[in-house]
Length: 408
Image 1 (tube, helix red, strand yellow):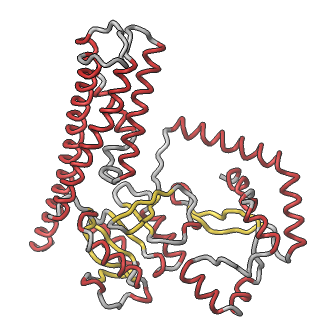
Image 2 (cartoon, rainbow, N blue to C red; image 1 turned 120 degrees about the vertical axis):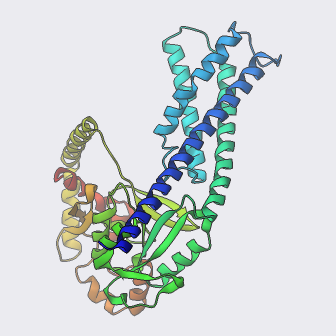
């Protein structure tokens, strides 16, 4: 290895260490801010409840010192609940309304648990007014702290701190628009590295003053070499199988997040989360992690529910199958290739709602072909059979999904 490569490797290592240090420090700041906010909130609730003579308060006979100490002892419990609500997860933290909703829900759960526990274990009496004030002041204080940290984060990102190394897959107009929008919004935290082009556009002119780093064949090497953290896919520039391959490789990675720009949601079956990044709505896959016992219970429940559903719905399924056969020639079930849990590709079953000669029908409607390429769907699709329209309106075409469950 040359001296240049050694120095480059060391520079990458230092850069990665700095990013990790910055994230840890900011998480520590968030935890410290929540501690301060909750301390202030509980103290104010204590003072308002026990040091004012408002007529809405009843005498509870509670010792004032004991009440304040109990409130402060709840802070570690509150932080644990906040962590369960992913309020220290880097993908959720400081994300605007999503984070604020989680703060509200977490604080409400804390108050509910305190009420339930005090009822089941009545060791001491707790003032209901004090609990209500803790909830009100707690939400206000934590939201104010998070709003303030968000303003600080924006300043740091403008200086290139606490950003995420981002790669855009595609070099078409949509990819260019995404790059321009993200660069115009430095507070979103995307550090754009460049573009990955498919075979048809691998020699394209670098758009948005960013380089085309290579083709899809070199993508894995580039992701590793550049320590990419976010991959944004311009779905209009890639073929279906290319998007599936990328998701198989990275969608369930612990170090890389994959986001879709728009369209093609039907090829994935796992849950999604939509989040705006620099005013660009992007879609990424939920990385669900179940404990072993949770997985066993879920699997047993899925199989029992699917089997019971098929038995109960058997007459309806038979009637639908007969109607499909009488409505138009072709198979009863339609198979589509999708990506499921763990990145595994499988054939998902649905009742067929379209004619088998759909491609031939579209060739006689050029305008509809253009609309389909642009929007991935048609408002008035001539390929859909009359009975298929009924199935779609009632969502009955999805009933064979029960077979997918039984097939694992």
